[in-house]
Length: 230
Image (tube, rainbow, N blue to C red; front, side):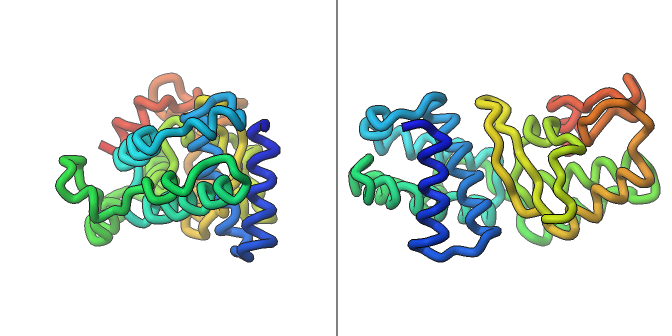
C-alpha cells in the first residue's frame, strides 16, 4: 500500500469515524507522514506488519530532541491514533499501540529537558522587533516553538507554501519531499507578515527566510537557524 493512499484512508478515518476537528486532522496527518517517511521511506503492508516496538520507541525518543512537551503530547496522541487505525485494518498488532511511551517515563532517561512556558516566553520576548534581522529571527523562533518544525523544514518554507486565505502552511519533508499541511497560528502569521513587510530584503528567491548580511537575499541554511536560536 502506498503512503499517499494509506494517509488518505487515515484522514478519512479521523474525519468520519473519530470526528476530529479539521485543524487536529491536519496536525495528526503531518506527524504520521513524518513518521512514515523516517521509518519506512517506501511504505508497504509487509513492512508495517514487521514494525517492532523497539523501533517505535527509538523513533519517539529521538523526537524528544526536537519538540517541547505540548508538541510531544500531540505527536504521541497522533501515533497512538494511527496505530489503532492500522490495527483495525489488520496491518499491525495491538502491542504497538501499547509500545508508545508516555512522557513521565522519560524523566530519568537523561534526555535534555524542554523549556518551561516561562522560559519559552522569556526566550521569545528577547528578539528585537525593531530590526529586520530581529523580525526574521522572531518569526523563525515561532515556527519552531508553535509548530514544532525542525530547522530544515523551516529553511524549506517558501512564499508559495502559505495559504493566507485558508490559514494553512504547507510543510515539505526534508527526507521524502512529501507534503503535509498545518494550521497557521495567528501569532506565527503576524510575525511572518511583519517580516515580509518590514524585514525581508529584496530578492528573487522564493524561500521565506533569507540571509541579511553575507549572501544577502540567499536562502537561509539549517546551520544558520541553529546559530540564531542558540
